[in-house]
Length: 381
Image (cartoon, rainbow, N blue to C red; front, side, top):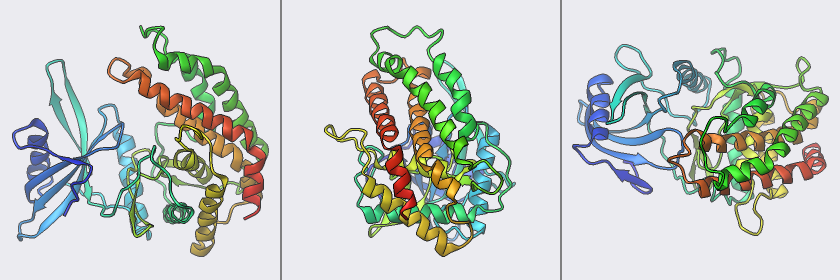
């Protein structure tokens, strides 16, 4: 059954319980709902574990997700298609997507408040068991754990070969670095945010530097030759692959979840982001620094698994040249996440998000300062 650690029981009689009960019993017709736990840790969607009694009397656990109201139908459909495809092609690390009796993989339910009525997409999947001892701030893994995590990512990438499921609304990383520059520049236009807001002050202080790093990452990717036909491998990237989006058992990565950012892109885009969010230190004395020994363990795990699985090609010379700039792009992609503050600044803690943005700027600086070291590292494997 569901481990209640880091989860909160949803009481009967609440709107959350009633909506999830209707979802489970009436819409998906999975059985009789017993208990609901809210699972914390995400910043975008709401997640729940539910315990259900099936018609035959057997107990079953499921995972329920309420997506952000602004999530498009196309993006949800893409996510569900790629997870299903990966499982069908040998990936035993992901939870299967459940369907309603009429074949839908998600449904929309209105949520009424005093101010407005919002329509949220809901979906149910199998429950993914395993330990989840880390979060993206508490990310001090052992080198062997990073290697295991990377091997799991290689398995997911390999299982996505041949997938043709459409495109996501968010552009691929090379284009992302270009089109998001205008977004960064005009982020606070028309928003009456206080000039004393510490997030805004930190953001504006470093904006020009971030814009220059967008250009540097793009140039490094272009100069590498990776864009040439057959030189850079594209896969279905998880796009949010970090230490708390995987499950663990006995020190080994045994499951992957949170595929809602998944999109087709260069595999190095997935890797670069994962390295920055999973290894960059949050320790006060080492904030933003990345232990290159752990990077080496991660990349050796990925490269060894890719060679062993023998579905995707090993890293090309062009990919190795692009590798440091993909890590830089990953840090910028994570910086972009912190700009969610601008869209909900009245409800979010400006000190918390200022802490995030300053950490990410330090991470970007660290990567820029170690471009050559990262290139030598990847070439040594």
